[in-house]
Structure formats: structure tokens, C-alpha cells
Length: 452
Image (cartoon, rainbow, N blue to C red; front, side, top):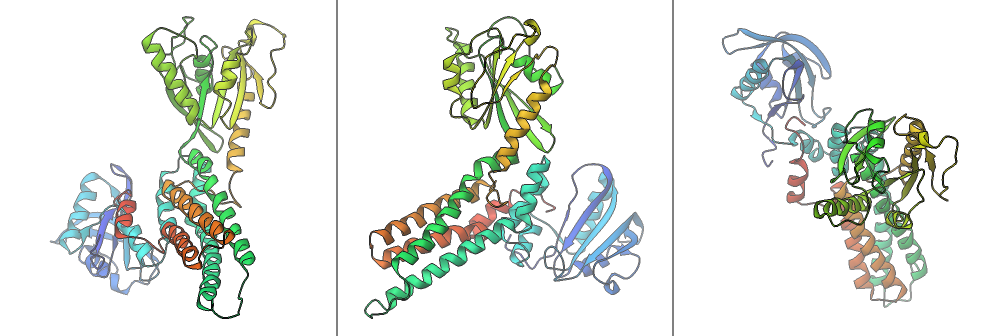
């Protein structure tokens, strides 16, 4: 990605056959290159942001397809360069031949993420917004899409910019203190510097803590279905999905491994993990499945604890799921006991249902939605972190600003405090690309599709 003066082209729509395909061409000679394969209104006379009907033609002038051309003149394009988009029919042959003609005319095939990288270089997007473009494309639920759109529109970047301004203010006051350390001049007391640093630390901490919820919503909220053998966990999964996904039998220990399926309920995507029944066993294979059940509990944001309504609640099960943020207790097989009331678990939603008849399933769906909404409520003033790179940078920034606070409280040398402060600014700047390296850029943009 070093040849930024090249003109690049790529198919920007999904690969394969479709109604239409879009080819994007961007670079300093984009208009001249497309002119060589275009038959219709002269492209050099077209105003920016206009759409025109014409044809893509072979070198001998014969048409290979009718096309719609959209032109974006620099700097008012996604990449900041002259950009032309050609909408053609989605034939594999037409797509391939049109790209070949553009390459023969002087373009080269774009690398992964190169269009968005050029937008970043042009200052049209910062690095956090550029990464959000990929998240918007990959979003598989309304909630995940909302997080990505907020980041792409700059909500997260604005918060980071405000934090950076506070840090620069703090650094300026600290540098003045160092410059005039031998003078009897006080620009700000250590108490004032400490107050600024603590506000920054608290904001960084809140953003970092939103990551677990943000990642769960982005990738699908992990829900572990756990409980003793023969409680009806697999039947419950099948009832939620409306499909016989898991094997169901009366034989204890039928489920030997975790089974994972996804389900979208309203705007949230849930990843359900049906687990092996928790019990003591001498069966080596079943024991491996139970170990995986415990791993699923550790990774879950929501646990559905399933017990047979006729059986008492095992304290061991309560202990197993105690650390999970959201717990829903389900008392299954109520179709077998009539109107008898089951156990009650304090501080947790409790639902009586029958996986066999479907009674209570809608209440369980509502309880899942309530938990998902609480996850979404962990956003800090509408901003939720969902990118691991950002979370790691925030963690580093939190640790370094904490060292600044410790230094200010202990009257540490101003030089050492200033270094920790510069580290904090560096970590926050790395998120938006204010401070970055070519290796980081290469890694980030290589994850994009070719046409984006």
C-alpha cells in the first residue's frame, strides 16, 4: 500500500453472480482511464456527483455491457481522489472483463482495504472511523449496526478528542511547572492537576469497561444453557430456535459436547450454547464435555440455568454461574405438575415453562431481551467500545494515567510524571491514528475486502 499515486480499481459488491455489480476506480488518472473504456456522454465534461447511462466497450469499440457511471471529483469523494463507479450487470464474465479492460487502460487492482486507507490518508476518516466501516459491513444485527454507525460517524473519536484536549491541557500545565520550577510562579497546583488526571482516568475506565458488552453485541451475545442432566436443556434450545437442532432423549448424558446456534430476537443477536449436563461422572468423554460446559459459562454474558421443576435447585449450580453478569432461572417440565408453584431464586428472573409444549417460551425471550438491553445500557454516554485494538489501547492509557495520578499524589519528579502523561496521549492517539505506525495500518486494512 505504498503506491498512493496509482489509480486503483476493484469490484466493490459481493463476489459472484447478481443483478448488478459495482466497480470502483479511484486515483489521479481515474477519469482518463475510465474514458478509454466508456461510450456515452464524454466523461471529462461530467460534473461531480452525477449519474450517466452508457456502455463499457472493448478496445475495438464493441460493447460488452450497458452501464451506469457515477462520478465523484476530488476532493469530494470517499477517497478524496477522483473516483468513478461503474454499475454493470452481475455476470461473472462481464465483471471480469470490465476489470481487465480498466487494468489494460492503466489502473491496477486494489489491495484489501486500499480505498478506505486512502480515505484515512486524505483525512476524510480517522483510524477508528475507518475500522468502523468494516464493522458496518460485517454487522449482523440492528444493535451491532448501531454501534458501528455511531463509531463511523465519529461519536467515539469525538470522545477521544475531548480526552486528548484535557491531557494536552494537563501536559501544558506540567511543562510550565517544569520550565519555571526555580521561579516562585504557580500556574496550577498539584491538586488541580490531579483533578484533571482523575477525570481523564475515570472516562477512560468507563470506555474500557464498555468493551465486554460492546464485543458481545457486535459478535452475538453468548448465552450458555446449563443445568443438570435430563433437565431439558436441549429441548429448550430446540424450542427457542423452532427447530430440532439438538438431540433429545431420556438417557442422561446425551449431550456430550457444546452445541452452538444463533438466533436474532428483535435487534439483538444471541449465540446460544447448549452444554453437557453438570454432574459427577467417570465417563472420560462426558467429563471432557462437562469441562467445556464450564468454559462456556466463563465466556457467557447470560446464563439460562435449567432445572426440572420437580427437582430441588442444586447449590453447586448456583455456585457455577454466580460470576455471570445476567442469570435467568428456568424451571422446565411444568406440563407434568399442573398448577404447582416451583422454587424461587432471589435477584434473578425465574420462569416456569415447558420446552415440550412451548408454554413460557415468550417470557424467556423477553427476559433475554431485558438482559440484552442492560448490556446495551453499559454504553458510556452512547459510546460503546467493540474493537479489541481499541480496548487494549484504552487499557494501556488507563494504566499510564493512573501512574500520572500516583506520581502527582507522591510528589514524584515532574519529568517522570510528564513521561507517563506522554504515554497516555500516545495510547489514545493510536486509536484514531493521530499516532500510528505503518505496521499497524497494514494489519488493520488487510482485514478489509478488496473493494473497500
